[in-house]
Amino acid sequence: MKVLLTGAAGFIGYHTAHRLLERGDHVQGIDSLNDYYPVSLKHDRLALLGSQPGFQFQQLDAARRDLFETIGEHVADADAIVHLAAQAGVRYSVKNPFAYVDSNVTGQVAIFELAARLPKRPPVVYASSSSVYGASETVPFSETARADSPVSVYAATKRAAELLAHAYGDLHGIHSTGLRFFTVYGRYGRPDMAPWLFTDAILKGNPISVFNHGEMQRDFTHISDIVNGVVAAVDRITGDPAGTEPIYNLGNNSPTMLLDFIAAIEKAVRRPAIMEMRPKPSGDVLRTFADISLAERDLGFKPKTSLEDGIADFVDWFRNYPGLNLGSAS
Ligand SMILES: NC(=O)c1ccc[n+]([C@@H]2O[C@H](COP(=O)([O-])OP(=O)(O)OC[C@H]3O[C@@H](n4cnc5c(N)ncnc54)[C@H](O)[C@@H]3O)[C@@H](O)[C@H]2O)c1
Image (cartoon, rainbow, N blue to C red):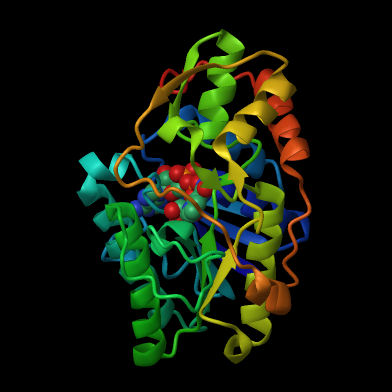
């Protein structure tokens, strides 16, 4: 199978590409290599992918209006598009809303326009987010619940992307699957996310900011489990396009209190955290909790990695990663 994969230099894109290549698929990766976090980490991921047969890469903005003219020829034989490129991060969207509209909304239109013009009209598996559930108090979050009260620009753009996917299905018959990821962590993860920030600070003896006095819960999901879900979604939609749900939650179905999460890092690092309690940032939600019954039924999705094992593996990688001098990660 040949896959066009956007966001290939990103955290989830890198791991997904790696898995697809490992099983013999061809991956045409694109990524704008934006500097939201240090680009050296993206280059390190790409270097690892480049050593695997079947990987090709082009630095490209997936939100270009002339995407078809730019790469249409290279990907004319693509069997599927995995669209993971996005401006991620809830807090950054407070100050930089346009980056989100450009990458996440215009980018979604550009990718679906491309799919509609390619000869094989490949199905699109794209990344959405648990943030679309907003401040919903009904848990676990189910795909059938309304998701029309986002509390951040990031969430609103992710929900807009889902609605656009629906419109392209109706208008152009493009099949798609949206995957609502729940707080993904693991090796080669993102320097702006809590696992990285906390591990880095605790190792250096620096204080960590604990929001809402630790009264927050996240359904932390290990990258290996997420990749299982993404690849299963690709296989399902290429094999049986009409038999998939439009949207699946990919989460751990087991929310963790922030203080327990910090304790897991302290245990793996073998040092205590210095905690500074802070109010909840606006845009952050208090809790995420995935109902994964649909993904289990259709994709065989069953998270296997315990938080303890996943964090131990992340910390082990973090201690040995030579590219750690990333500036913004400290
Ligand atoms: N990591 C998580 O916990 C999480 C949770 C929910 C949803 N998501 C979604 O999963 C996807 C992957 O996230 P990630 O954690 O790997 O983030 P990431 O920032 O590591 O990866 C995204 C990649 O997309 C690239 N990119 C951004 N805009 C682009 C554009 N216009 N054209 C081409 N490339 C562009 C970036 O350079 C980056 O390498 C995103 O859509 C994100 O919104 C992630």
